[in-house]
Image (cartoon, rainbow, N blue to C red; front, side):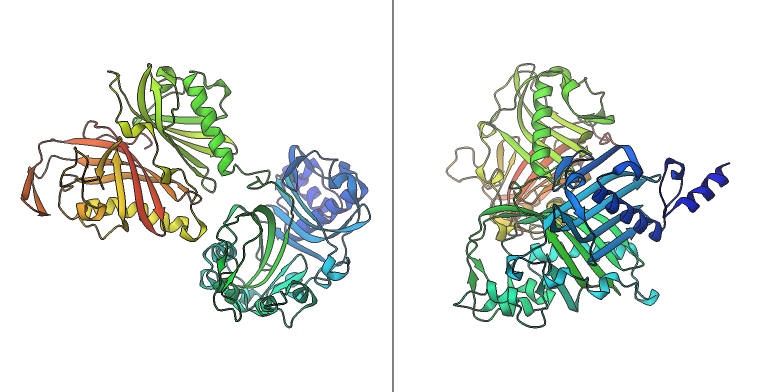
Length: 612
């Protein structure tokens, strides 16, 4: 019976799709046929013949939209000859870039369909007017017919493995953020079109470029004739603050195409922007202020290099908007606030918990509703640090709450998947005696709350490396291993353990030192190892890295050799064996560690982190 059903599905493919085809994996031709069928149904305003899942979700221009609304109501024609298909049989996805008609006017459509067992479960519409003032309010020539390479199959000898295709396409965004042409594998012949206008490797000054050319400089024409890589090196893209909510849509190995949706944020910094390698200009005003642009890009990748880029975008959305699917930094911060409020109320019922959520509190697996869920009585206070990482779906809180009506230092980490909390960590410094916390736990250092200037940001990969280098610096007793700023200050449960002002009555020869300087003394040689390092959240906007770890101490050596400290040559290690679960927040600016906020407590030797 199953064989008969599959045969029937094969016969039906390309004609219509029904629930009977639920077990069939569509090939590239099937997926393209499905997209054509979908577009035709849009124009007919009739989804009846489309294999929609019962819980299908449609997002049009970043807004959740009911089937039958949006373009389902307003489409009146198309597609034209300008149509590009990106079909992915491996992931059962298909995407489209092309010109449609909406209420009689041409529009540029970026569409995405995701299938599960033959049913469409997710749909994206990115819709933008196609007519351009620079083309006399007509459709630009670049949107009349696609560039040949975007609709031609690759020779098998030119193909690239799909994981390498995706890596190459994603590197484009790194190249923009890092203003480095070397960050992505651009071919010398790489050409980029944006909404039909050639904006990189233009063969000659275009009419569009002439319109955009300032009378005083004329540099835009030169800029648009540069190669993709050369443009990146000029710094002209520095006004792009960050690119987030990256969603790979489809990888078409046969065509060499990759499509990715993303959101470009711009916060108006820096202003002006320094510009290099562009004759006639050394800086450019960044006069646009704060704005956000959702975008779709299709990349042609041949022999591992990017040759063509076709880009489209929509405008008029809110600053730092969600793409309608992702949990943004603000979304993660809101979920953390919701969690903290529910914790203080001892009621998890209103928190978006996944069915299989797991909680570990102070390295012990704990049912939700137990532990801090029972003992929390208030908070958070003004001492509140949030580290939100949209790409990883991680958000962390370090601050002061109330437990059994006593002020308590706590660290909470949430892993969010599909807007639901899947993993929870609690690290709680219980204060059963109700002792006053260190005065420094009443107010957060400003740097830990401030947004990072664009020019001082580095990639998340480098931030992870720098955070990890801190632990290596301790273990190696070498302050050169980590990039400490001279102003670096570390606080532990509020107390300043390095970088302390010499005028403070509690200052010592050790805590007055610089971070790197202190590492070189040997004072940390009683730390046997630092294990279970989990660098979980990287907040590029604030320059913060958040990590959990366990500091191991076996009680050796009994006497530590101290070097470089006048009058001190050794120090007793009389702590004995113990472990110390810890959380750290690092402020990283310009590639250096400026502030470290550490929280930890002493525990029995030999504990696990609770997640094994």
